[in-house]
Length: 371
Image (tube, rainbow, N blue to C red; front, top):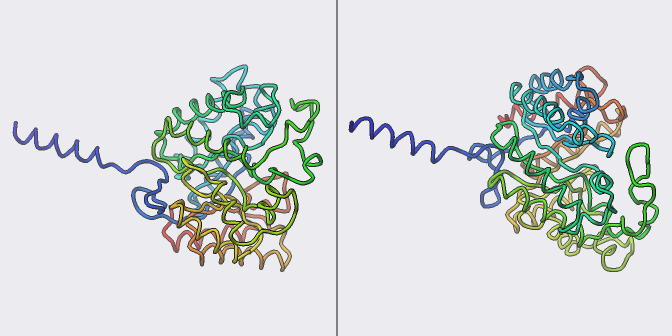
């Protein structure tokens, strides 16, 4: 009996200290399995959109195999439809919708590839679905916010026990559309055949105050069901003029203090990481962002970086960005983009002209021991 009780206590103690799944943050350090982590993955933007559009298109499985073969540790992907029309299946046959998303998650599990689902990629998709202007994202009592909370509940509770889920992301670059001096020329696109609204007005414009509210409400919704995993916004580097856009409605470039103020505000608690996208090798703003990351104790995730085409200049740019990420000690980054036929100037495959980028990530991750 004593031996049985001792063994039971050991097993219970082991269960109590098991490392949380996915990526977590402790005192500003990004952790995986309770150990500091660095890794560079890829965007696999349409791995779910393919099967969402055609239930027999499981080409994501072969894609995950290629990524696993190249030691790519994780991918970031669009985890809803892009256009409202893409969400028809969710409305008419939710079980089938999740069967298709289940397939993506289970395939990633089999191949040992992590997932960072971006739940609300396109700014206007959810408001258009529920018949509201885009600005209603910032109203916690709106139909848009209610739809967000319900989808978060369904997705997070369904997949929080999956080792494939590394982090949760809100959407894609919402703050880039905030406080634009020429905002009327850059409202969400109108394509009624794809399920969008038939027109846009000033009620579809976003401000920085609105995006801060949106990010905080999303993070609170996630934390209701997942107490540990990394949460990021999906934002880019702030525009060079973000502070002046908010305060003066002008394109005047910000100084260091203004840039850092905007970056702090763009990543409100309980968001636990700082989301950035980097397509220019701006070493100065990298350094400024790292100061904010240390101050807030929130690790940086560069959710997109990359270079177009394969000209000598663009190849050199890719290597400069990769080196900048490495030298700065950025813990997490994702190259844009794997096997995306709609963007031939960016798409990366194992046999295409940009395969050298896949190979470069393989070598970097193997050197880091990232998996």
